[in-house]
Length: 321
Image 1: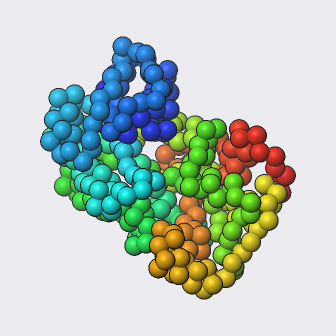
Image 2: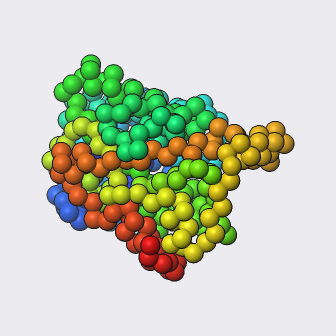
């Protein structure tokens, strides 16, 4: 088995590679990324190469020369560095995915595993209480990450029609937490108070990073295909989260917050605009029914247990609710 992992220097990528080398020591793994890996992995079965995923010729040449059985495509922009334009993000997120897909087609790769996101559903008033994989992918114009995930999935749908022999496993995770995870979501919980939107519960679904790794590994070894939400059972509202971490919950009227953001953005004091309160106002809450019944995986932790495991790992005191 030969596995190519793009975005291999990232947190999920490097953790996945370590896990695969332990579980399947006979597999050959090639990882690529725009930056070097922080973790040193010593194995005769492992190789790392610097690769710009937006460089079409380089991507296709590498895939064709290495000829993997499966490609795990993790390379994307979650938190763009200051000054990175939307055009550059698109070249990495969308154009980069097209490069990988074309390389897979040309080399007759059996399977591609794509990490999409629950953000692909978008942040909309019409979102169902629990979103299933058959619900529409709409993205959100105010969030580049969400918009690009929608475009990537539309691209995948086109390739599925034209190249049905290339198996696609599309994973749509909720918020990933782990012992060493730090992101925009965890930053929210480190503030002096938890801010919400008045009249909206803003529920979050969490998934433990080890579950994500196990799901990808199972997908490779069993050559799985299909589309699956990736989340633990249940959800936690922002008010429940604030109660657990013993911080004040401050629900702000949406019109007031939109006005403040409009002024701050006009003064160039924030990158966030009025539309971006939808991120908290209309959370996509992912059902994991298909993950358990069709894919055949039961997450180790519920959303609540995932959050508790994260707090324990960070040494943050909490109360049960």
